[in-house]
Image (tube, rainbow, N blue to C red):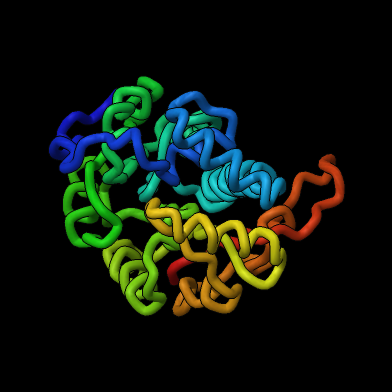
Length: 270
């Protein structure tokens, strides 16, 4: 089923197809079709400087899938709040979770107008579960929690998913405060999954991202690994901690992982 009460408000801005947008470029790198020529041009220019960006994008999605699988199968989580979900591609949070536990409930939150247009694609669910969408900004965590509570029972353990979204908050202290406020609204037994672009691994990636941030598009800031780790302060980090995402519980049958400038981890609230 779906929960239309959790679809909140029209997008506040029109879709601008003259300026590249990170969600659409990310969709392009993942092999999706929900983008415009300006996004493909920006994505191609970026990959000309750093061809490994498609590996980063796909490794990020693979990490998310492994984290959600752990949350459902090992931690018993049946509720997910995924903020900054972006455009639907493959193995979205609700698809991975409900494939294992059809009764799982998922609330997505994003404020991108194109994502809102595609809300109907996101608002699919197994008959036993629920998938809903909130038109809301990460910088308004109180509103996100309030509207999410129309669909999720926030007195029960819930997984907060922040995948490649915190890099849009330039100020690290502000980003940490947002994460802390969201986790404060969730009970003991809840989990936090974070993965974001990182500095200190690949100079070409850093050069490409810094150049992209100067194009006038919405910037995304790569962070040192210790700053990504700090998002988990006060929580119980699960093994292997915050690592380059191909090293987070890799599939034993997969090729040997190689480090990339994308770090992530999963933690539990006591």
